[in-house]
Image (tube, rainbow, N blue to C red; front, side, top):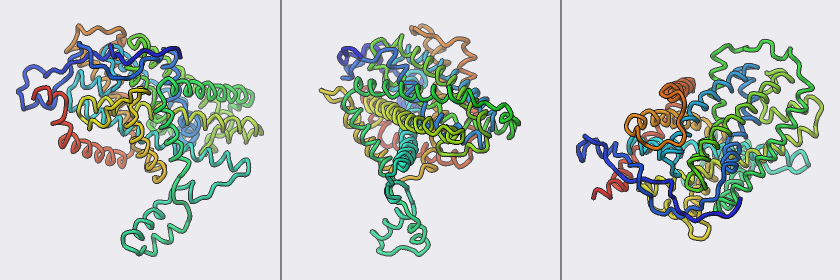
Length: 509
């Protein structure tokens, strides 16, 4: 990794300004923006990440549950062998968005990712909405991946003869409800007691892995990046092993019919597996800890996304060609396919690779979450407790530990079906706003230095917005309802705290 620089944040050159023509006390308080120009105060973060670190950060955040879990589920239930088209559609949507991210990351900078870009181009209220969406994306996704990680670990231990108690590996919401009712009312309804007796209570491994990663992130960004790089190499090696073995078992007949659920199935599969791509945007949260962010951020975002999209298409194509697609509805479809073909040792290695891969995804998402919180707190939209950076480790220790405890509780006490559904819609909405931010800044700040410019503007940002909105429309109604509830909660917090404590409001006095 090399020697790290100090906390000088020369890339975060922002002052505060109000949009012209808006009356003070009116829309001005909602759409006030940041000027990109003067240096931000020293953030205390350590600049030590290289271009390769950012590429590995992106790959670490992308390749995980998508390739080891969702590929099989989406193929079996939605797209069939046409899952390769689903990945192509999702990858294309991400490509347009990634080009927009790359432009804003190089021009605006800052650790706030899409939140910071929205603050510079679209105004405070839009920035808050994006930041709140990113909290949903990173926080809930980390918990969801932790639950999947726990399942892989449990299966691996079972395979070697170690059986973890059901009460501490599976969540039963009825058992939790029974415990709460017994504590408060001293009686439990018979129906709940009956369901609670079926077993399960808390997912201990899922909670413990998040707490362990908290300690890794507290230690420092250099240590976190080094660990992530090692895990990325392991999972890429495992994926390479799968490709090498699967290439000798291709059965073209398994691709007929190619599109058993029609084009709607392809699009629904694309909306589902979009979860596989979240994480590349976490690269942009590392701006203030990167040695040369204006050069490295665009490269890290675009290269990591391109590499992962190719891997997804190749693996999904091989997976559906070596076994019938309808047999892939399994928690570990890639490993299961190797077992079906008579390669138990390869299946074991793939299981280990899946555990390592999911760990790196959690690490990257957790890292991104803490930097979003840090940026929002520094701007006054969240309490200052989230803005503190430890002098020795140069990491936001408080926010890491607070977020770690909350996510451990979610992962330990919530079934995965309730956790994962919210992630995609929050991500897609944030991506759409990033694309809009490129168009707005091209118009409002045409002279802003742009070391990287998204090609084909305005069509690339417009296509990014269109793809994201289209995929959002393919999500279930219940997901939209939960998203609206999350949005309302966020607006209440902003109106009750953020609007009056914003650094913009304080500066105005």
